[in-house]
Length: 70
Image (cartoon, rainbow, N blue to C red; front, side, top):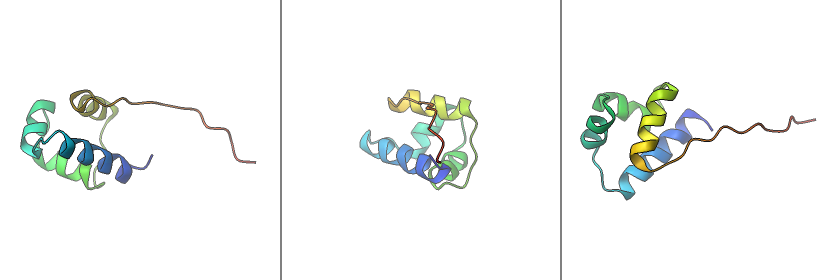
């Protein structure tokens, strides 16, 4: 998943839960500006931050091994 896709998923879930950016950023312990950049695909967040956001939003992170293209 690309960073831009990740940001879109976070924003969509935040909207579903009717959380504002200030609310979510406060809960996650990050700045509103950082959250804004993550949602717009303009940031390169750490796994720790992504995991924290996912936990708050009721999402799950998965790491899967893909088969190589031949």
